[in-house]
Structure formats: C-alpha cells, structure tokens
Length: 196
Image: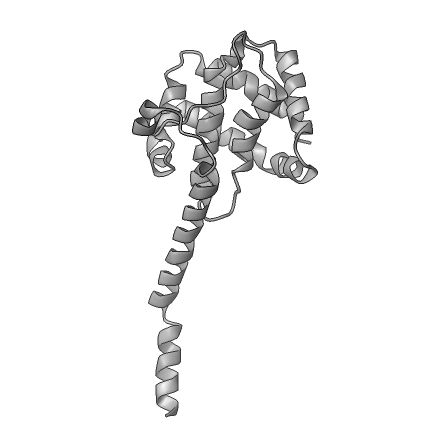
C-alpha cells in the first residue's frame, strides 16, 4: 500500500507534470492579458480588423491634443506593461506599438514641446498615485524597448505578430515622421516621469 502512495506521489511531482502546469499557467496569463488589453476596445473598422491594426485615439479636427487623449493613447498602453510577469514581452510590444501609432497618427512632432510637456503633466495628474508609481518604475524599460523597435524594425516584427499588434506597428511605421513624432512624446514622458 505504501508503494502505491509513493508512486502516485512521485508521478504527481514529476518534471513533466510541473512543466505542463507551468505551461498552462503561462497560457492562462497570456489569455487574461489579451482580454484585458483588447477586450474593451471598440472595433477600428473593417480594414483594421483584417490587418490587426488598432486605430489610436486622434485629436479632434484642428489638431488639439488634450490630457485625456494623451492618457488614452500613451499612458494607458504604458500601464498595460508589467515587467517580470508572464507575457511581459508581449505587453511591451503592444504598448510600444500603441504609443508609436498614437504619436504618428497625431503628428506630435508638429506640437510645441513645452505645450506637449504641460499636456502630459496634466494627463499624468489624471492617474491614480499607484498608476503614477507604476509608470515611474516601468517607463524607462518601455521607452528603451520602443527605441529599439524603431532602430531594428522590421527585423523585430515577429514579437509584434505574437502580441497581435503587428498591424498597429506597421501603420505607425508608415508615417515618414514616426521617429520625430515619438521623440517629442518620449521627451514629454521623460519630463513627466524624471529619473533620478
């Protein structure tokens, strides 16, 4: 009787079983992350659905960015990035693609840097203290990832395909001014979340 208990106990703790459990946990985490990232978004049109592109929030006619638009288009995607968790590389890809798309769609390089810095500070004030603390900690890595994305695109496109946001990144990268657009958003983020 004791041998049977030892065999079933050994089988329950086998490396294959542990690997299966870990794989199932990772899959569940990725599914949850996908639901959280994309579950509340409205369809961006038939063409976007076919390409995997997500339309970013755009400034109203006249080009006026607002703190609310910056929160939705830059800060909210950045808040979805959680380093050190299952799926963190996918969430960093989704955040980078969304922020680049927002910057290019809104042609942010045409904005005055001081004005954009003020708007970003106002957008930051819309966040909870917990969200602000999270961004203070995670933005440097996310900014570095976004910079790397710009430097090596399209060689790194695979991670964006895995994250389901390759269409969003492709749309952003089509803009001739995407690097300039991102540079002013990056400067505004760095002004709002200075690193000591």
